[in-house]
Length: 415
Image (cartoon, rainbow, N blue to C red; front, side, top):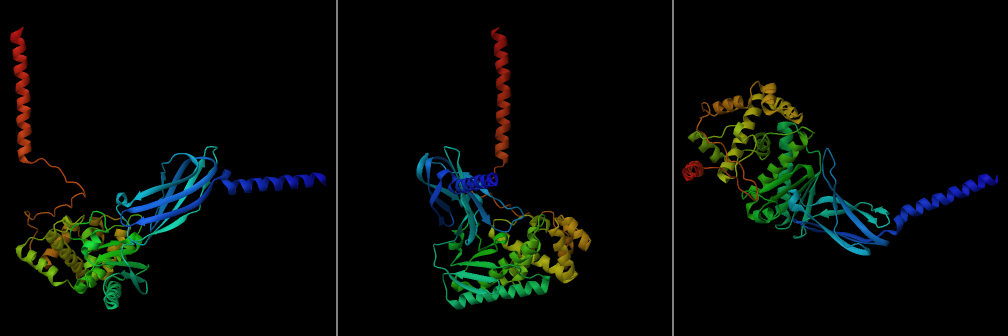
């Protein structure tokens, strides 16, 4: 009986020791933890911590809460001078990540070690990376929440109604529906929007973030009709992005943008004019040439948007919605664009280009038709050797050969 009692006492003392040690982590404690968003530049994380001995190592672990097949966590070391009680900061530069939309939820925690080898891992804290530069108002309709800061309630309501109409249109046309909560951030104009983005094109008026269920658009109160179409357009990207989401899902640009353009309804007058002019002049870009990206030149980009609308319209009107949905399913599975088109319609991208052109009253693609200029890499320019540079290099090489020959000749004579 005494032995049993002794064992119980030892076990209780051991449990008390282990629990106490785990909670105290060798005396390490967090006095204060905070995060200060500075949208769109980054977040400053602040920590005040103490220990009975010097703290020698601090790391911060962050993870962005978004739709992802593989959750990504980043861990970074914090630079500081060792001490028993200290306050440190670490800044996350969002410019390096390509940027995230406002309202993004980010979790973070601290990993601390002291000179005795004791470690402490904090619980996860949460910060909302929001754009605090403006006084946002909010309106909600079903799964759609719209935030704006300039314009009256009627302005916001009409934009929400445009989003609801786009959802109905996509459902009736392509059999897809909204399966997620969507956040709209409506900036007062294109300048406010572009100042909130990382490396935007000069013609950017709206951006969709499918993995974050967020959309950012710059809409002036006096340009409401354009704003309603853009709300529908960007919502189309999110809905289709949800439909083809998966480990292999992707869409060629003409298909992605074509669906988004159809979400707006009929082609607007300015886009129709661009398309009609290119048809008359026989200067349409080929479908294959707009499969990867659109040009940075605004006039060429507008034509590519109009063409994408027309190509998608041709597929749906000619072969029906069911075949079109089958095509999207193949892209979700990661099927290459030529193969996907061949399986559903019996032709590849070039075949589609030929049929679509024929429907517009045009013959084969002219060989002289230029391809869209690729969008330049932000912050830099590509380098290519033009004719003058090539000639200069040839001349330099010839001079080098002549110099070596003359040198050898003089050496022989000197001997």
